[in-house]
Amino acid sequence: MADLWQSAMDHAVVREALQVDRKVMTKSSSVDLVTQTDQKVEKLIIQSVQEKFPSHRFIGEESVAAGERCVLTNEPTWIIDPIDGTTNFVHAFPFVAVSIGFCVNKQVEFGVVYSCLEDKMFTARRGKGSFCNGEPLQVSDQKDIKQAIIATEFGSSRDPEVVDHIFSSLRNIVSIPVHGVRGAGTAAINMCLVASGCVEAYYEIGIHVWDVAAGSLIVSEAGGVLMDVEGGQMDMMSRRIVAANSKIIAERIVKEISVFSPLRDDAPPDGHH
Ligand code: IPD
Image 1 (cartoon, protein in one colour):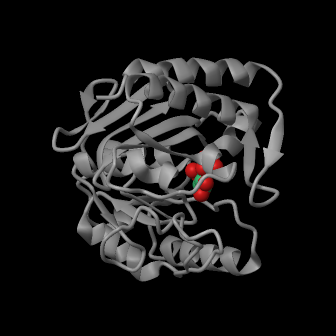
Image 2 (tube, rainbow, N blue to C red; image 1 turned 90 degrees about the horizontal axis):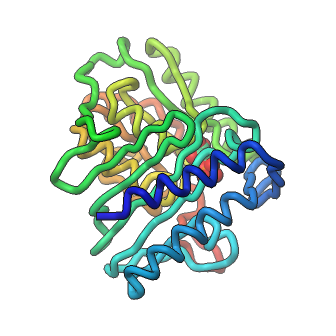
């Protein structure tokens, strides 16, 4: 099992950084933000894991941003988002998480999401359930989408075509009608909300593998389901996800999504779909 206290330490770094100057840089677009804290936390995690498990591999959001390939092999691999909710972090909007998923043979074996400001540690081990601060989690049993809250995000692309897809899906979902639509500003926490039974589902196109690796196991171990936005099996590298309390709710959401396909996380550097 991962060193749970490692995330606690990272959390301390993140909280401390919230008090001081947050130097903001941009990545894929003017709204895709990164700070020195993202980079610092990722380095800290990788260094400390490497000391214990020198042969293990890593996929880290900031290492990929710095040019490393994002390829998931069968080898033990730590998939790290040092700060999920970087935009929240920059604005001190209080949902920020450290997300670590551990894969072997391309299967997530355990996931840890630390919601830094709520002080909640979400954990899941494959086959052994999901927990928040040690208490077992269970998805909601609501099967009527009209009684549901759905979580989603606007993402970090401002390409007009993408924005049209996002609003079209949102319009369809709101008009079902559902009880409400929410977004915490972090994919990892949205998925923990599904696992906790606070929302019935979360969907998004445009996320990355580090946003959802840990959360996907936390959802499924809490009794939830994962699906691609066109139905069928979720592919962690495809940047598309529906995570729901049940197949019924997931399939109902799939019907309403205006689908598009961003460049895969594991796309070759020349960038074909
Ligand atoms: C982002 C957050 C956000 C989601 C984006 C992600 P980051 O991750 O999870 O909620 O809408 O798609 O990229 O950049 O804060 O690690």
